Length: 85
Image (cartoon, rainbow, N blue to C red):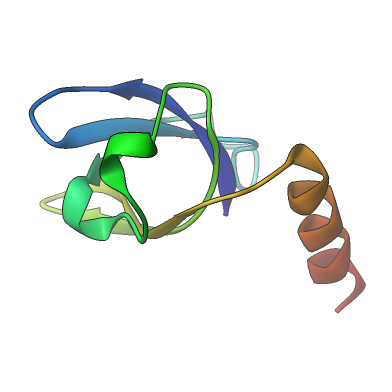
């Protein structure tokens, strides 16, 4: 799933907003703990584009295996590849 960082805290967590909701569901934020970020946490900023695996923990949406995307074009290319499968 693709999205962007909506808000990042100094306490080691952030919230991610997906680019689109699945099957007509409303957009919801995903909790992101710094241990799920596959990169330098200090470089992550609000507005950064990310790719993540959606999950559920204690009934709430969480972002897993989160990686920072270099450019918006990387998101578009990856989404096109998935649609073609």
